[in-house]
Length: 349
Ligand SMILES: NC(=O)c1ccc[n+]([C@@H]2O[C@H](COP(=O)([O-])OP(=O)(O)OC[C@H]3O[C@@H](n4cnc5c(N)ncnc54)[C@H](O)[C@@H]3O)[C@@H](O)[C@H]2O)c1
Image 1: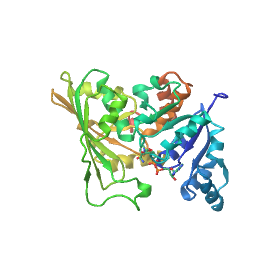
Image 2: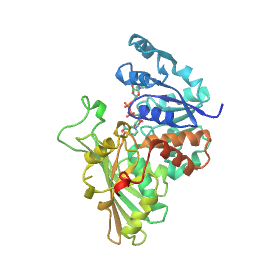
Image 3: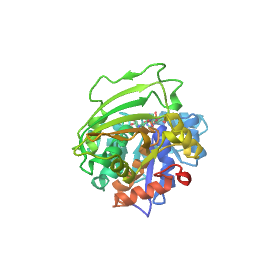
Image 4: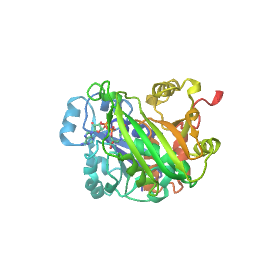
């Protein structure tokens, strides 16, 4: 590591990469050296507007960027020569193929949830397993759904309450930026495989969590919603459940009684709060939908897929580079920089 700040590259400036780049730029212990991509349209021109140095992830892309009037600072290999760590946010599988390149350049690498656990052998969720990632060369920040399951189930699991968890995940059909091209209309597409991959994926973060998930995708693009039913090892009261979730970082309550009755109203709240891109980095748990019947507890929560993994990626940078040995300190630092909260409307709550 050179100098006081960790030097960071972002490869793939899409839904996740552009948010990670902005978040890195906010950290006082990190320097965003540049972003790399293959696009040369408005998406990468925004990076120029934000003052980020733009690199071409492949030579043909560099030519296209030149032709589009984008000042290209170099190739991805040039960028790798100037950084300590790269957050690879390129599409799944394409990103995985870069591993040898990062290894050869002596650069630490972080991948996103589209990749398999086996790529790095370490699946990361800051509040669960930060310490195990310290000074590793590679890690994978788990997907949006797995991050949400890890955070919420960790609140219960670390208290020894989980006998068996089951969750139903209704995923967004596509992301807003590409909804002219992808998506579905007037339907829901169930995943046929049971368990859906998110349950086993959560076990890469919390290995002894007994969890089964079912999933499907619907014709909306504002985020995902999960319904979790957790059989407990002893009767857990509603107050205990509420307190456990309140104590868990990056979990915040919303209430239908406040008019936050659906995915769209919660996202509208994020916009009204002037959050960048209307992002919600927290898992939003409906406080007035929490329930307990003495045998099981029940949770309903919203997962803003475009944003939730961004703070995790920032913490993963600190863990891999070892600049902050204490996970709780990293989480607190990241949360302060982004404005992550326990309650979205503190003045009236
Ligand atoms: N979108 C989500 O909701 C979401 C949530 C959590 C995790 N993830 C994961 O994050 C990763 C990135 O997903 P995304 O949704 O940001 O994708 P995206 O399609 O929005 O962005 C990918 C970016 O990579 C660029 N790119 C394409 N080929 C490239 C190459 N060869 N080299 C470098 N850049 C290249 C694209 O131009 C684009 O800007 C995936 O692993 C995905 O599973 C996505």
